[in-house]
Length: 456
Ligand code: FAD
Image 1 (cartoon, helix red, strand yellow):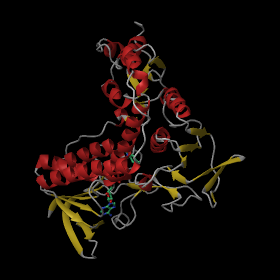
Image 2: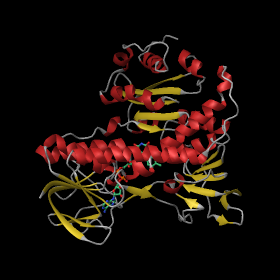
Image 3: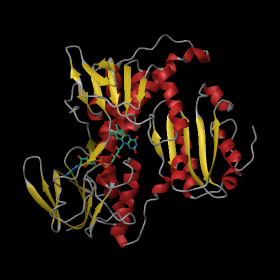
Image 4: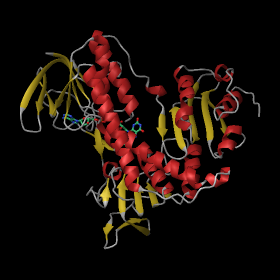
């Protein structure tokens, strides 16, 4: 009998299997495909590899501005695709080695919760039942489409296929301007594809600070990405030359449509009903302190959990919470108030905690401060002055949230993560000094003005 059987080898599942070694727990990890899950194989890592190719391309393209002459760059798509694959393969190899070194038994096959453990059906049809004291479900999510736009892998695709395009698409419609849609629009636009983004809500990056969304919107316009907000697309029309995507009284014709309108949990066929585990529109509600489902001894982590952000680092933290509870009953609950959310577009948009609108909706009397990058020496040196920092605090109280739009936002946001997580007061956070010249000084300036003073 295993102490823990984990179903699903993505960030939630593999993190649980790895972390269990801290407590000497015996673990089996059941994975029906390749170890790594969405994040390593079809998500975070390959998407960021493409974004980095676009960043290198864009840097070479504007090198003359910095006095470095080069010829106009040209893109070798197959080489970029191969590099992306090598990055993914290297990480998967490293992860497999780490799981082996931690004595995790990897079982290849489809796992299903049964009384006393998990039934595994291997690809060749063989069945095996793994008995377990506890089970962690980490079966993740898959792309979800919208009516009329069924994925066909060629003209209507999800991010799964788009990360493996063997040639650069000339004309692309991206439906949905959330993090995934905007990341694709960003790198495809920078690499020279004609990109049309459609978003039903009234801004790109819905739910994030409008000031930050505007920074990205300006960059989109500069690189020729046409982002249309507040529009719903009609059913597609397949023509000899492409796909017509209608919206309002107009339409655009593209070669391929990428639908990025959200992800559905993978919770069918994993034995939930028979085990009497409650679900909510396919997601699994859990006790947020322990990650336990409505059935004691069965835990859920990652993208299948109801009401928590679908992010790899959230899955890691939830796995730690579940294993800690399994090991000795103690609590290591996730602080969902201080989860950094990063959109790796150019420029990046990163946020933590509440936006101004969310804080007001929750009844806070808020104060807000923002600071652009225009006067920041390092940003001027880098030629990246379009960004902004915005911090929200409760009047006479703690910092509630922050957003940064800048090429380095994904790194910069972490100091604000501590401020939000530790409920720092603006004057406390402002009392620390930021090194000069750094882009982080914009955060220092914003904190100072939030504390009622200002320097520059
Ligand atoms: P998954 O990673 O989906 O893994 C689930 C695993 O379970 C899969 O390997 C699947 O094969 C397996 N499985 C399913 N059912 C069974 C079964 N019955 N038996 C056995 N195995 C099973 N997040 C970030 O934090 N940062 C990012 O930059 C980021 N970028 C992204 C970009 C894209 C394009 C996409 C699509 C997602 C991105 N995400 C990002 C989200 C991130 O990938 C997910 O939040 C994360 O992978 C969720 O981990 P998980 O373990 O819950 O599920």
